[in-house]
Image (cartoon, rainbow, N blue to C red):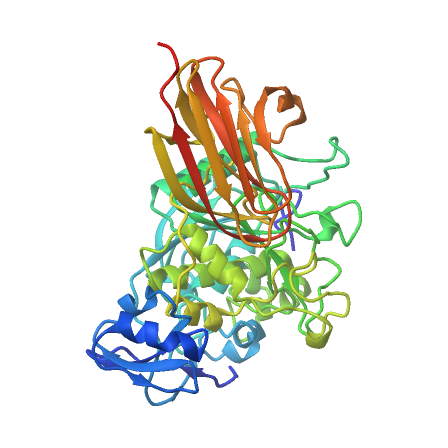
Length: 545
């Protein structure tokens, strides 16, 4: 089910035991030869498990262990316990809970800090029993109350994320630590005004949302500008959210709103930088034909057929014979067989929120990398006959795996990138001060191909720039004129003053400024891959005043 052009049981697993004041940990190494160095770094008493490449250590606080050089994982040890199983009676019909391993990490219902997730959609049934005490704030940008949902889409999406868990009622939301910010942007005719969407994003950010879910989309067609619905205002709103550290999750769209299906391009805003684009999976593991494809902007997949969730009670009331009022199984046929990338996206938003609840200081780019890089690969062996191994246009990095992401969260976090987003010249570039700057940052071919830094040079001042890119990639280095507004724009190529584009990850360039001003250093990933790079910028004194 879509709107704008369109709105886009549990298996038993093992989980870590609850934290105690002191505990024993296994600390892994890459090889047995690395154990002595790891032992020295740990200090104190350790027990070697050689020939296994691991040590046993007892500690009261594990976080320091995660940062040890040479440690490949940290695992808290103890008796194995069964995973939590919610008592909500309809949970057994929510096949996506088991597919995502939604509760397998916890032996009991977790008690965690609350995380605000904004649902920008068609509103919510504010009186629904599943949302009592879960709606932190609400606002309508289309005139009608945000606590009324005549279309059902927003209530459905909200239920996937935040329906109360373990209340012996209805369904179980995937994120028991979430409170909702409800922004209503869908008009009575089912369309979304870009102005309403932008204002809703701004409102959600100002209300301190950590995650924004956007199960909506506008058609993208890079081959036909007449059909392409790119909006600079939407892009600016998304950029503002990312600047404030918000994880933005969006459905990549359904083909029923495109000229044909499957459509080879993700919709906007999923097709914008730093947005986590989500596609749909069928129960048999295949990529359903309605789910848009995209080689770049499809980041991760989640179940998108036969999803069961909450529905406004006004939409289920006509089916009086159905006992489960307020749930999609009592709706029309479309709702009883609900499908769409719209309903896959909130599963990923819920997973992002639970990572933040477990580690409140985690950054948005770390959340995104944890979710994508721990996803289960989708390929012919898992039911998708057309899906090659590793990342692909059908399912991105693969199927969401909440347990794997949470386990990795407790082991080693992805590196932070403190200057993101810095994807273009002009005001988007990160300003670097001082005569010499050395920094480490990250690039990702599928999500963050460019980093741009502004450096101030005096007339006739020499500057030397070098970069060591992620291993195994082709990393390029470009210096742009102060008047540059955009990089990677054919019309701007005349503003390149120096470039180093040799094959491989290492590049360097030297330049003497022809005029004073803020120049732009672009580090660009020219091949598939991702990882950390190191950049050095050294300015020499001008040769004359």
